[in-house]
Amino acid sequence: MARRANYGFEKRQKEMDKQKKKEEKAEKKRLRKEAGGSDLDELTGEGAVPEGDDEDDADSAE
Image (cartoon, rainbow, N blue to C red; front, side, top):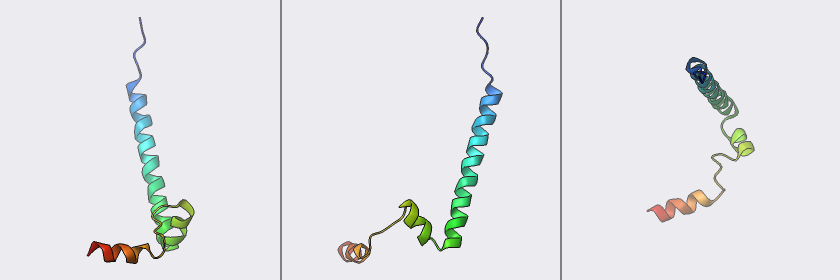
């Protein structure tokens, strides 16, 4: 007879992973806020907008 899976353990692991991800996201957000948003974005490459492109996009959107 096959053993039944331990669903309680799997659920706890999933919840712990979700909580860890949430804490990491909050830490990144806190660091970004302290750094003014520019330093962390340059390191990770997230949210970076090449200089000069924002003016060209504004003109073409009108």
